Length: 375
Ligand SMILES: Cc1cc2nc3c(=O)[nH]c(=O)nc-3n(C[C@H](O)[C@H](O)[C@H](O)COP(=O)(O)OP(=O)(O)OC[C@H]3O[C@@H](n4cnc5c(N)ncnc54)[C@H](O)[C@@H]3O)c2cc1C
Image (tube, rainbow, N blue to C red; front, top):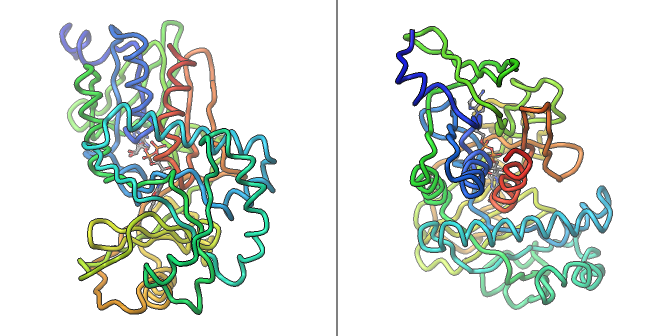
């Protein structure tokens, strides 16, 4: 049995948020900004945040030209415009909320490598620039082919480079630490090692059940609950329209005289790489084995690691001496298109998830919208 003190201070809340990724933390922070006296807890299944938010590559980006052209095909121009705008707004809000220094934001720009097969996309650059210009107050994409040699890419593979001054990079770990710090500073309680098994709506609120070694289970209580579990949402909402997608990433050891600086996209966003100090982080190639990679299991797929290793040597670092340090993986959530889902499940239960491969950008924005729906 819980004491009266435990019930008051640890079990009962105004709002419970499930999941301490960028969306869960941003939702809680936005709620506190709107309602400073609200009693808010975040329940996180891992001892550490254990989703995509601590596994990602730290691109602070809004989308490459070829990727946005694909989005126009599935979403149309207006929704693609809105998506790019939400990502950009989200980035500005994240930076304003946490500050550039604590998250190590670097404004080195974004680039897209254009291979022979993507050259036809360049014909549409003016149209996409005109579409997106109102978001940035200038054209977001510029062709700059002298960069191919400057960065040392393989000139028989890379035929053109598109530069965008509106993309940057962050230190993902520092960003998450800063978000957790901000949440705690605002009085938000984060319970880790608290995997939510189920929730149950009662007449007076929502009971949220977490397994526990000592009590067998703990039923937390809240007036309203937000589900921010991204790729793992089906566990709590079996009807959720999402498919998990594993992303595999490699990091090199430090490389002498590395001239590559910035975030880089390739093959309509299926490959991405960046410098992290004097190392390279490269991820992607999920499209080579979509079936195996549609999983929530952390793990490594040899077909993909071999392809990433080859792409790094062949296209990105043909003239450098380097060693791959290691690989890691993380789980994203995808749907039929790239818009995230924001849902009111009932009067008391809400959800924000399915952030795809650009959650760093849109996470803050989604969190704020979710908070606005709930508070
Ligand atoms: C390898 C990789 C590279 C990426 N690179 C980039 C990038 O460079 N730029 C970019 O913008 N985006 C990138 N992304 C995508 C981005 O990381 C995600 O879109 C974003 O982090 C999603 O945030 P989230 O809060 O919705 O989900 P998550 O970070 O996945 O958070 C969900 C949380 O819920 C918790 N949880 C799940 N189920 C339960 C439960 N039942 N009870 C309690 N807690 C639960 C999980 O442990 C997790 O901590 C990348 C993703 C991956 C995997």
